[in-house]
Image (cartoon, rainbow, N blue to C red; front, side, top):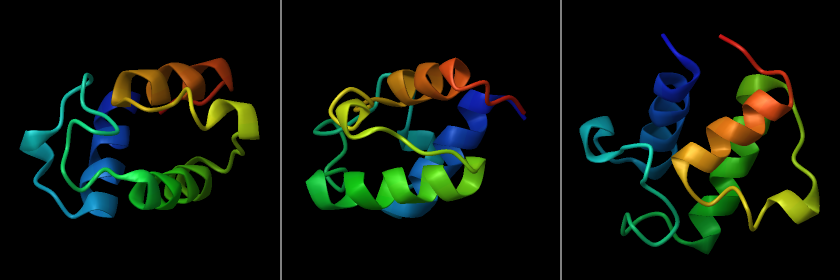
Length: 79
């Protein structure tokens, strides 16, 4: 499983959507259930799953799956 696949799994589980509906370009506003409240829940799930923390400044930058993966890679997260 790649990091991208793991993030997609977490997004799908958190938002309660089929993972087939999610791509690297999916993000806040492109999926009906990915609103600001669920974005916060997603961030918490990601932090827990990868044992990392996002800085407050990052929260408005990690708004797509692709940007989440890039941020995790910047933090040294690997699968």
